[in-house]
Image 1 (cartoon, protein in one colour):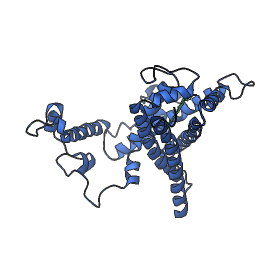
Image 2 (spheres, protein in one colour):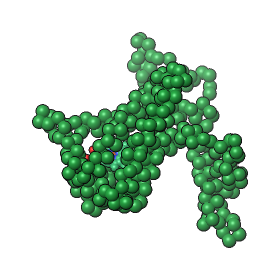
Image 3 (tube, rainbow, N blue to C red):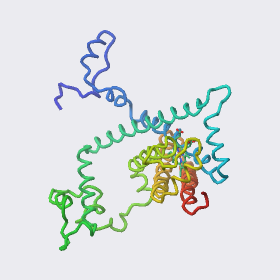
Image 4 (cartoon, rainbow, N blue to C red):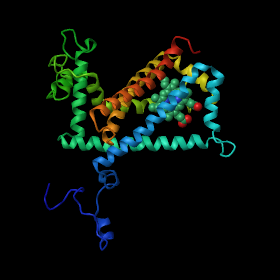
Length: 316
Ligand code: HEM
C-alpha cells in the first residue's frame, strides 16, 4: 500500500476543528466505521455475551420442549402460556415479542462479531475469502472424485468434477483429507481429536444452526409450506410438532442439527469463559470444560430425544 494513503484502520480520528470535512473525506463503509472499528477483545466480549444469551434460550427452550412427554394438553398449555405471559397487565404476546427481539438482536450481534473476527483472522494468515472459497470448492470436487457414481468406466472423473480436476489444486485445503491425490486420512499421530474437530468446525456448525433455526421457525412457528406440514394449525403446537417430526427426513435433520448444536455450545461456552477471564487456574479450566460439556449434552440429548420419540411413536 502507498505509505502516503493510510488504511482505514490507521486513519486518525477527526479533531473537533474539522469534523464535517473529515466526515466527507471518510470513505469507509458503515461496517468499517462500526464493527471494523471495534477491538478484538470487544468483539470477543460481544460474542461471549450474545452466545451466553442464546445458550440460555436453548436451555430454557429444551426444558419447554420436553414437556411434549406430558401430553398434548400440557404442551399446548405451555405454548399458550408463552403468549399470555404478563396478562392481564401486559397485552397478549408482549413478553413473547420482547424475547423474540432480544433473541434476534443476540443472533445478529453473534453473527456480525463472528464474521468480523473470521475476516480478521483470515487477513492475519494472509488468506482471502475468494481464495478460501476456491479451496473449498476444489476440496469438494476432490471429494466428489472419490464417489464411485461420478467415475467413468475407466475410473476417470466426468463432468464438472473432471473440469475442476484439471485446474491446479495446491492441496492446501485440509491436507491429507480432501486432496484426492493424497492419503485418504491424516496419518496416524496427526489425526485430530474430537474436541479439535469441534473447535475447527465452529463456523460450519454455526451455519447449520442458522439454517436449522430458519427452517424450524417456518416449520413450527409461521407454518410456512413446504417447511411446515399441510396439517399445520396455529395454536396446536403439539399436533404441529408431531406431524412435522413424523417425516423421517425432517426428524433426521432435527437430530443432526442437535449434534451441531452440542458441538457449537460446548466449544462456545468454554471459549466464552476463557475470553472473559472466568478461568484463572487449571482447575477452573477443567470445571468450565466439564460444565460446558454437561450443558451441551443435556440440551442436545433432551432435544434429540423428541424426533426419536416421534419416529418410534412414543409421542404421537
Ligand atoms: C428437537 C429440538 C426442538 C424442538 C422439538 C423445538 C420445538 C419448538 C416448537 C414446538 C416451537 C413453536 C412454539 C410455539 O409456537 O409456541 C419452537 C419455536 C422456536 N424454536 Fe424450537 N425446538 C427445537 C430446537 C430448537 C433450537 C436448537 C433452537 C435454537 C437454537 C430453537 C429455536 C426456536 C425459535 C427461535 C423458535 C421461535 C420462537 C417464536 O418466535 O415463537 N429451537 N420450537
